[in-house]
Length: 113
Image 1 (cartoon, helix red, strand yellow):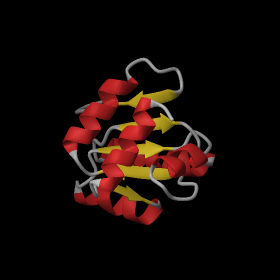
Image 2 (tube, rainbow, N blue to C red; image 1 turned 45 degrees about the horizontal axis):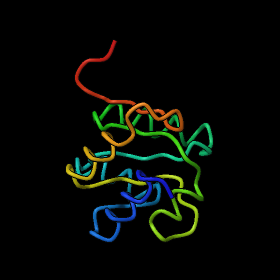
Image 3 (tube, helix red, strand yellow; image 1 turned 30 degrees about the vertical axis):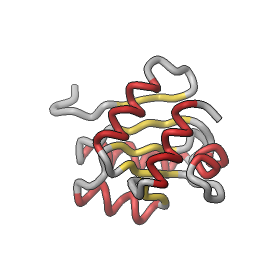
Image 4 (cartoon, helix red, strand yellow; image 1 turned 90 degrees about the vertical axis):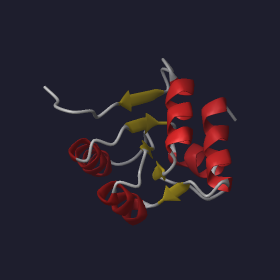
C-alpha cells in the first residue's frame, strides 16, 4: 500500500475519518471536513455531487484511487467517499500527494474564476 493510503489508515485509527455519502455530506455542511477523498471510479453523478458540495463549502477535494483501495486503506469494504476531519492529517495527505498522476486534487479557496 502506498504512503497516502497508509496515512488514511492511520487517520482512521485515530478516529479522524468518516465514510459514506451521508456522513461525509453532513461533515461538509457542518464544516467538520478538512479534506474529502472521492474514489476515481465513483459514478459521474456522485462525482458531480461532491465537486459541487465541496466547491460551495470551500472544502479541498481529492479524486483518485478506486473504491477498493480506499476501503482497504481504512480497513473496510469498498468506500466511494471519505472525509478527513483533522487538519493535520489533511495537510499531510495533500503534501504527500504532491504531483501524483494517480489523483486529481482540487483546492477550493475563496472566489473561483
